[in-house]
Image: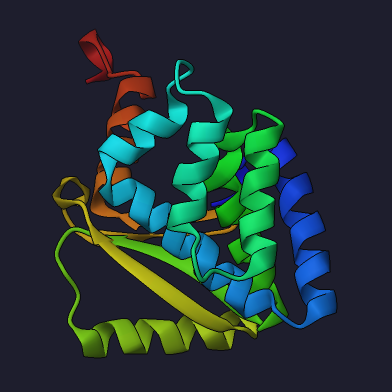
Length: 188
């Protein structure tokens, strides 16, 4: 989430968001940045080429131009600015920070939900409704599974973490047992 985003990416994201807002293209830019990051995540060969210092900037520009064909010009230009300033490593953080700004415009709160077992759709819907009612924004859930949690759930939204997992409770119990002095001798 945005609390782990490079501060420089926030600067680029804010400038892009202001430009896209002025042009009425916020959602289109968000969609195209997300699509580019997704494409790069699914194509390690292309990603390696883009981060390869031996590949000249013009070659990287052609690769990105090909990937961004048909994209919103503001999104394309922002990515090319990152390339021109040797800041392409900020692309994922830029996309993340921009997505948060775009969601904020729509009064949406992205929430990551991690559970020990997969939740059914009706459970996700109920959880989404409860979170939305609690925060006064439409919660947009992204669910994942981590069996190590044993039970319960972990919620992450922006820089807030709510850990209601059995794993955390067991860890707190373990720490309490370690800190508690045991009675010895006649105290027992």
